[in-house]
Image (cartoon, rainbow, N blue to C red; front, side, top):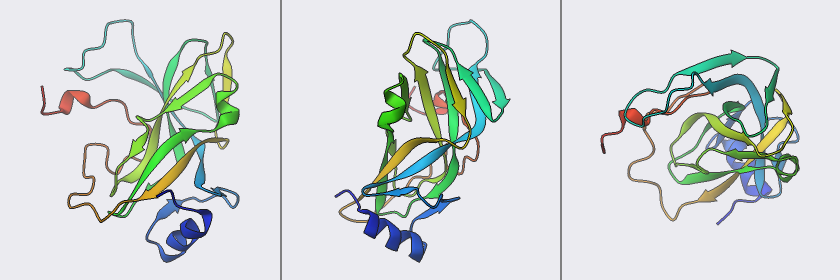
Length: 175
């Protein structure tokens, strides 16, 4: 079940769900808007990427970031979230952002128990550069209540991230 603005307000007021900072107009009828942070990562170099080795990234902190056509970068939300063990969230791009050709992902899912800022995967599908500005609404979180609290809430390698975090796939044990 997707949670309504009324339910989201109750959960936020009780502290069961935490979002900080929460913009005054962030709560929508069935979602919470998140804003673009100031921290960005781009892949460093031209060498092929191996999923078995760490990826090298170039780090940028700025209020503005240009994403060229056909290019990919990682960004973060301004907001830090903490989900209880009975809530999960979908990360969705805002339609106004998609309509200019900016695709936003984060693998689409935030597990129950996650705590941290959301790393976003951005791709410019347009034929012209897109100027990104920190503080702009960039995505939305759609929350859903699970049928019961998770027995093993998220405690993975991205737990607690406060800035854009590159892929840590090389740390997976399923090689």
